[in-house]
Length: 237
Ligand SMILES: *[C@@H]1O[C@H](CO)[C@@H](O)[C@H](O)[C@H]1NC(C)=O
Ligand SMILES: *[C@@H]1O[C@H](CO)[C@@H](O)[C@H](O)[C@H]1NC(C)=O
Ligand SMILES: *[C@@H]1O[C@H](CO)[C@@H](O)[C@H](O)[C@H]1NC(C)=O
Ligand SMILES: *[C@@H]1O[C@H](CO)[C@@H](O)[C@H](O)[C@H]1NC(C)=O
Image 1 (cartoon, rainbow, N blue to C red):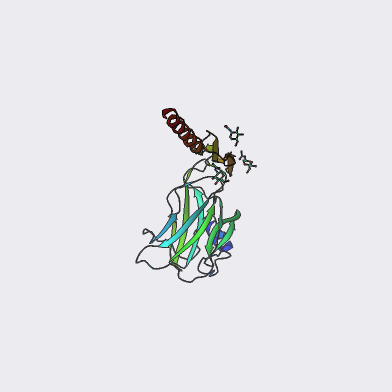
Image 2: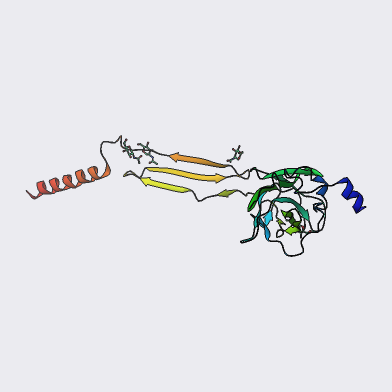
């Protein structure tokens, strides 16, 4: 059976320097290089931008060469649940070193585009709408044709329900001013975010102004005092 598969899929990551045509390795993730995978721990690391994901979230996955180690030429990366062979989610690529492959579902794997030496590559993984247990990224990394590592695994990625944005109303900023007649002008600015997450600004302004009055309170007060003094002066005569 294995012999048959090997005949049917004489596929080799390095023998396909453009990283295409390796879909036969989708399930095993083992390149048919006529050599066994290295048993030492891989000198490469699969890193994640986060340790949790929610539905549809984009996670950055980085395959990098450990300090001092030899760069890699080929790779195949998938997200998988525990020991399952089914790839999960989909990938997006934004640089010329990586391309998406269809392994059972569209863009469920990424591979190299050339056999140039690479220190690291970065791809984006789009999370499915599902709570996957023991979700990990698994990489096959080819240093040179007969020297490769399989099952180079990332840390696990844990599902969290998407944060539902609740209605938050920040404390309104209220400015109150009284003029001399006790007239009040109020300006209230309240910033509100509703459950749909879109912030809206509500401005309530109530203003009245007495500047139309010729006589302000102090002027009237002074007039009253002067009048009293004058009257007092007359009565003392
Ligand atoms: C995801 O599934 C695990 C295992 O069934 C469960 O313990 C966990 O609470 C689930 N998480 C969410 C956010 O539903
Ligand atoms: C809440 O958001 C929706 C959608 O953006 C918007 O149409 C609506 O006016 C908002 N409501 C408030 C009270 O801000
Ligand atoms: C009232 O109006 C005057 C000029 O029209 C302006 O300078 C003043 O700031 C206003 N006062 C208030 C409380 O609106
Ligand atoms: C404020 O002043 C105006 C006249 O400028 C007056 O009509 C109004 O009743 C006053 N408001 C209060 C609350 O005193």
